[in-house]
Length: 228
Ligand code: C5P
Image 1 (cartoon, helix red, strand yellow):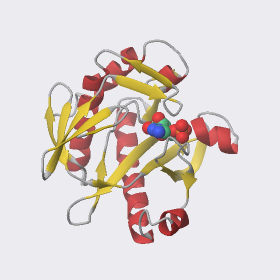
Image 2 (cartoon, helix red, strand yellow):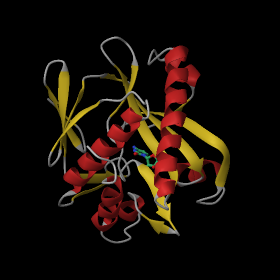
Image 3 (cartoon, helix red, strand yellow):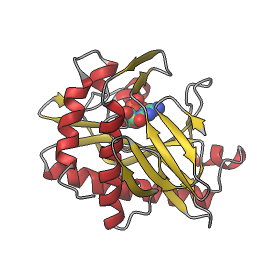
């Protein structure tokens, strides 16, 4: 068993059972709340999106949705990284490099950050991953290619429902044969999703803009177009 901020990972031997918690956090855990149904909404959104990605040839952890808030998944050796794909400028990108929220980037941008609350998730380049022994250049390149491909499929899915995917965070691991595999979660917690200036993601919580679950439920409803 391993317990993180928003999930519990139960070891089943060759597989794991991910329990999605009702906790929501922001700002390195500085802000923390428990919101009813959050775990079940994020688990079901993750399950349906991962199922759609599998059907489109994206290798990922998903095996089975166990309602209301668990996912049976492949066991992976997770890389201690957050892999962010950005289509538009927002959030920490704007704080770091300037520009305006929602401005287009000329091409999808992949960023790696080191998963460490104590170090505040520092940005890393491929050379950092190599010299710190996190992963090889080859694996890093594979992760970058997979992340852009996966984010583009999701962007097109949401576009089909009238929503803009601005950016998204993925986490990757290696399966028992050493293959790069998408893990963790894909939900309004891990992406910026907008429609005509309205926010359907965790920025509602980060910026105190009302009840985040009202927006997350809208995202769940559109994901229910994907069968499980
Ligand atoms: O905050 P920042 O602009 O770097 O976030 C980029 C994307 O990654 C956003 O969609 C955000 O929700 C997601 N993210 C995340 N977990 C983090 C940091 C960012 O899901 N720890």
